[in-house]
Figure 1 (cartoon, one colour):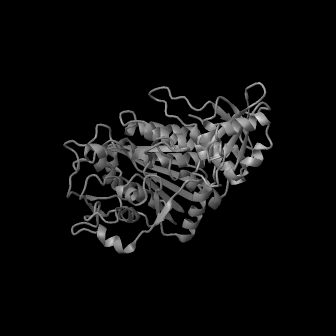
Figure 2 (cartoon, rainbow, N blue to C red):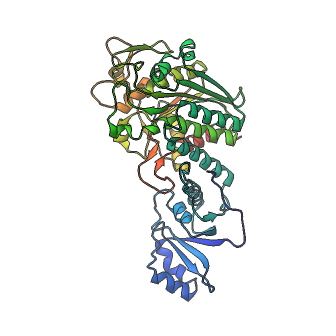
Length: 460
């Protein structure tokens, strides 16, 4: 679903934002019947509360939108606008430039609906782009977020590896990017053994999706997204309760594709590469087993202590390929560990990076984009936890401690030539409806990463 602002019109209904402390003064500036109406409704200008004030003809003449005491959950005001009655609206006053931008983006994100399987109409309220914001840029960010949500919300029967490939190719076609795909046993021929091993038990063949876009002489930015289209856990079968949401296990790929969409739509001056290992971790006679020892593309041997830790395996081969190109920056996105959720919950993905200057840039970008991430360490002393007796590394260290960190350390073993590396362990799902974040598939990280890349490499 496209996210867009309404066309300007002089008939737009004005929205006046007011803090709780300023409400008495505001009521002195409206008509007496309107002030009486506001008091009768018990309006206190609580953050996100809205009040429609009637004109002499009984139609809505203006809207008062509460900003409370000056602090509110992100996108609260955008949701309040989206929930207004049918009409075209325009923000007039009462917000800072930053709050206006957040509210406008929140409105666009609130307009998202997943309607593939039943009608799911969006808001009837239409918002004109506020003056002073980059409306087209915000729309591109919202469109990218909608792409991620659509891909994650689609169940695995309609979003297996072939369908993910089709969506990948459609993204490339839209922006004139080049695509190559390596499928099935050709993965073995071209030395992607881990991707092949994880996906070989499924009815749909595993594949590696590879997109390239932009000036070959520009700074190289490579994105790697985990594309496990459904994860049964393999022979270490998940319990039913844990398997229920595994259509979202390709959330890393969906978010990497969303970020690629934003980069290409904005024509950032980078040489973009997007890699997605697309597989299904299924159970059949061909499934890989606990205690198997596998050899990766990089040559490192991996002891399999849990077939449910498959995401880091497919990422390992893709990261090794990315590293052969020596990018200036490699970014991996994956729904990788439950440990990250235990540590930070579903709404705050951790990121890992050794470059302090890059981290400072990303931290600033998360605040600006209202897209939170939290830095966790590549903790060097835990390296020994991923080193088993009979192979170079272990895909699932025993003990259960620091699971997000040990997974990140595993991935870092496959990144040596990149100028910098960021890994994001995201959830890819919003468990309950929130402002600008409907229940279901979630875009987590791309807006912050885009903000950081734009600041770092310049605009197109």
